[in-house]
Length: 279
Image 1: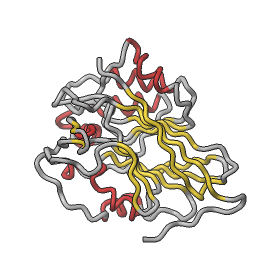
Image 2: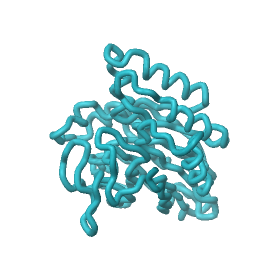
Image 3: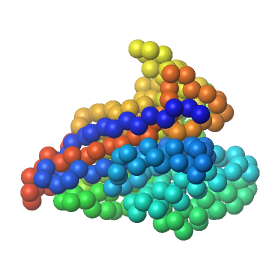
Image 4: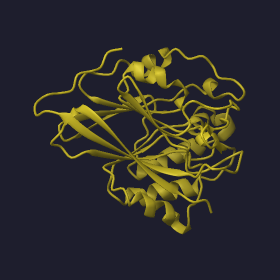
């Protein structure tokens, strides 16, 4: 079994008062229905080392294959729901194609979504969920990128209009978290107004070269720019998970699976809501 690493990152925002306790987010992505020990104990043990206020999933927790099992992903959600922490799961390309192609996948997505709903897990499909943390209003946007942007051997040009049409313009004052799965279009996500984008999809580049980074993406593009870790652009951030599982290419080289924790620390003053940044 592969070694699982936990990486913790911290970002700061003036949309949260500095006296408030930081918001702690546990990021999961690209499990692909993998089992981490009996009852998912290995993964859960690592998750409990970072007590989170919020668990967010950036997609591909299951395998979008005909008659593929999803019991390991559902088991993980069941065990996580026992922690009493809100869980919000965005769709990746695997969930999206299951949802959009019932003629091929039957009721697989319906089963997945129903079971998550029974566990209290929210799945925002081009929708926004609003929560609060201390002095900060948080809006979590689940964005389902069209499937044409996941084609192999081709990176389709993207101008951000689809994001704007599906989710509208982010409101001023709130801290905006975008569940986007595919990190390639970070420039457009940040311009739209996402203070923090959460993504995965690229599996860390599958093979990592020392001093260079990830080698290849699932679309067979060499040397991806955003393969894993935390990125910043004009004061806005993107956290990219290298994933918790594999599919199609069933190995990793110099590229262990990660759990990611993100701590959002406030720099604002009492009674002052942070200003939206302009580009």
